[in-house]
Amino acid sequence: MHTQLAGDHLYVAVDILILTVRSGRLNLLLSRRANTPYEEHWALPGRFIGQDESAETTVEHLLEEMLPIRQAYMEQLYTFTDVNRDPRGRVISVAYLVIVPWSQLEALMDWMDLPFLCYEVSMDSGGLTLTDESGGMLIPGDLAFDHGRIIEAGIRRLRGKIDYTDIGFRFLEDPEAFSLSELQTVFEAVLGESVDSSNFRRGILARYEKTGRLTQTDQAEKKGRGRPAALYRMDL
View 1: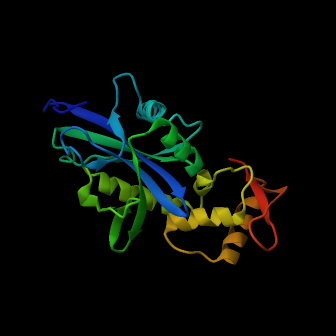
View 2: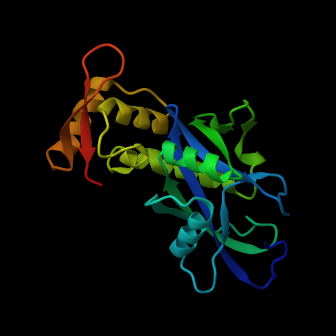
View 3: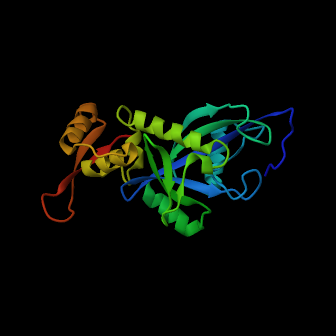
């Protein structure tokens, strides 16, 4: 808890974007601040880096305290250094993306009564909008600090990487057994738009099947009528 900072010191913090795909929509976890500045405003989870910690270690410790998830995917996003980003003093933030499959996150939120709220993420030419289950909406200016800007940067990074890295597979409930339609749902949630099923399937198979990282299993997914969908395994 830091309500006051020394004016002649430089502080370094971490802020975390915890992302999941829920009911076919990209969602983000926010927490409500209990202290000044920005008391009662929604914000990204975060904290200051300890003297004996790296930024990555701080994120790992924070996740252990908040969300004891096994092998959550994590990557550094960007370092935010604007001089006046924190009214308490000079604070640099190292932001991280953390991806958690919804089933794991939902179970933890129910079990631990976590002080977070899921917000559906929408970002288009009109900007970023966050919507909760009751229809309440937030825009970047409603959030604490520069967290709106951090979220926008994170969504742009995620959308930019999903077509040429395996980051989209990190949202899957089970990378050992998933259908291509399940994976397509993840891509559409991240991109915020529909994609052509045939082109998507061809693109994924061409990109990953020939390398041996993506293999078809001997299982099939049966949902409703029609031919059962083949299940695949991704080597992450």
